[in-house]
Figure 1 (cartoon, rainbow, N blue to C red):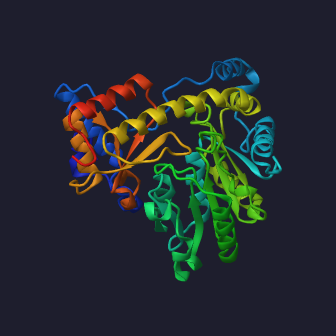
Figure 2 (figure 1 turned 90 degrees about the vertical axis):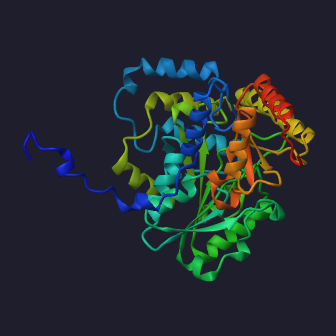
Figure 3 (figure 1 turned 135 degrees about the vertical axis):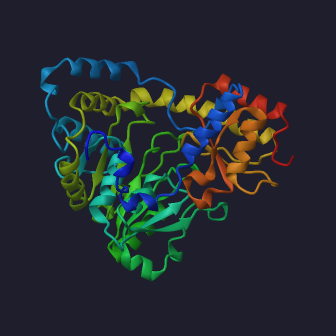
Length: 403
């Protein structure tokens, strides 16, 4: 190709076919709706995204700032994570969940739990394999499998089953080909919680079929009125099949630092480690120091963070119930999951109606899979005054469940 030739004569070849398997990312469509509304002068209140609005606790930031100045943290980090970080994770799991872990073989540092969930999928599934995913779902639970050219069997989460997956409904032919069973309770987006009995049944099922349990416990500490969500690893024998993913994003307002850890079955942790050694250079050492401090002082930071979300939860649930909804206060997470009103055929049309009518943004349930299309999600990541203002706008503009 000469310097004068047009690139149009030599078009780039297409991206990998795996990208064509991915559905449209609804959050991108939502961004377009928000941009159009702002272009017409709308002053939007955005209750859609799940990005914590409060800063990381100052003592954690101070530890990280000091660690950044330490030349020992300026080289490549350890692939597994610093021994101090992995020990703090093991200590936290013992203190919080009474789970005993070997920090050398059963804990892996992550660049955020989403990264770990995706890389675990790549480490385990091949073309023709199946991942079992309850739906609605956090997008990476399904999308990583599609990117890996595997199939996904969705288990609908409905109000009738308490938004828990019906394990008995899984066909044997699916179980034979399944490699990973994803669960996430407390759940995003439904805010549903699971008890020990559910986990006992899940562990027994996955042991029978040789399926890895990938438990995403991102919201394990955002729980109210003394409720303590359990860890799947608390079930006797769970480490035979299960790994669990923990995030600092919600528990410690550390979303932007990108830090988490995986723990559990040593064989699965080793596979995750092996993949990561080929794809990244580990988690920033200074951030590990801050995360270590956060875990070792968790009891100092968590109560205020949880209380903030509890007040916001009460305000939002009470507000929507005044507008005709009849929902209970969720026991955990930073979300409220509500049914769309009668008269709207899907969640996107309802959410567009809220933007056009009241300049309020919420997340359509379809963003979390087809099973979510009857609902929408409200995030509790705005100050109370902002939440009050949003509810006032809805009421002023005649938004009601039975309007």
